[in-house]
Image 1 (cartoon, rainbow over the protein chains, first blue to last red):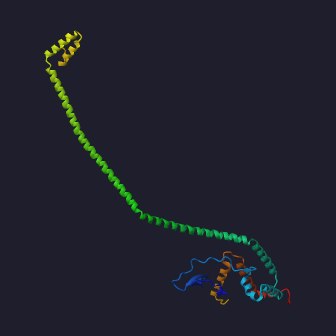
Image 2: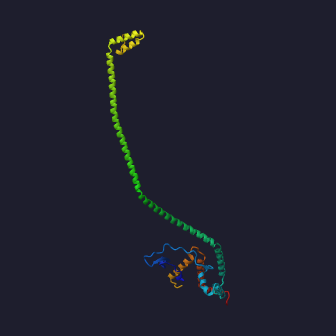
Image 3: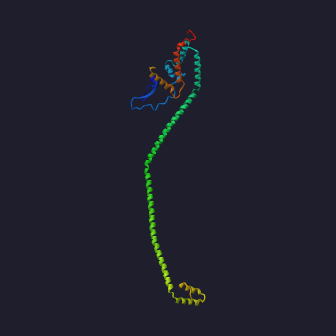
Length: 265
Length: 59
């Protein structure tokens, strides 16, 4: 029975060893590997079985019934049980004492309680278990997600490194633009300066010409005015006087005025 | 049941645990079998004093 119940998976066997610690007997599981290069199978731990071994009447395991089945069929163990109980009672190997009745009532009560509330208590316990497992699962999932996020970030950063040449292009373009701007600015400045110089020369020329013209005009006027002798003034005024009589006193005055600025007859 | 050494007993106890107690859907049978065995053991131990409490003399 022990050989049958020993679990064995793959090339590792579980051997049970007892170690005494502080007077307590503790069980320790040690995975014995046949080959040292083989994998120890402690983790992942195999999951718990769903249902335990089947038990009838809560007392007698199913193996007993299977054990008797080939020889006596289905009713064998029941007949055996009934006969055994009757034998024990009749031969008074089991003595009926007041304790028997208390035992009967206690066990009856227990059976009733278990039958009635067993399922709900089991569900409640299962729910608690599930909550614990869900919590652990959440932690595990969060950890996995975190690591996955880290991996993704690493990958994206590695991908970024491949795209550095775009950055260099942008920088190169910026520098070229700046150079162009400076060149044009200086070109414009040169143009302005040259224009300034040329404008200066032109304006100097213009001014000289204007001054010469004015001077010449003045000089010519002066000479002309100088050349008008007094005699000619008299002749012209007499002419005017004769032609218009008294009407051109003003003209005469004007003529006299132009010569020297003084009015005289 | 081949050996009653402590190692064997502990091994048997652990097998019992794995089979009836440490499962996902526990039942009352895991505990009740232990209690029944304990009760039987006590009865056998104190059979001598029960012998004198028999209600009938001849059976």
